[in-house]
Length: 87
Image (cartoon, rainbow, N blue to C red; front, side):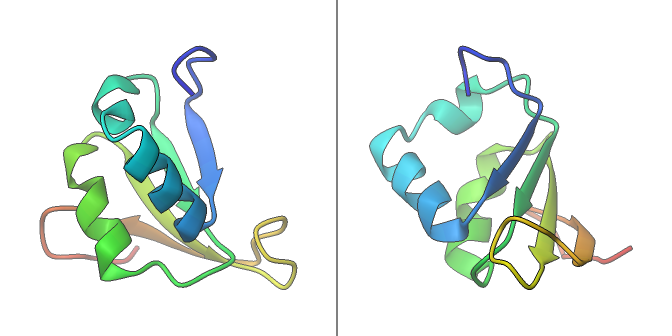
């Protein structure tokens, strides 16, 4: 993520948590990221609380029939660190 300067990421929440546990500071260091999409599993409060240091990143909660490969329904505009809202 840091080397490629990725701007859009897609995570299964458990994979995101594994990366965060192993590389905790990557969220703060990943300045190029603008959009993080999550799918394949529920986006839990635990994951959302981990995203609080990523204030400039837009977070989408996605749902699709093929676990993290196709998103059919997207919930855009999850606010991290404030009240959540939907668009």
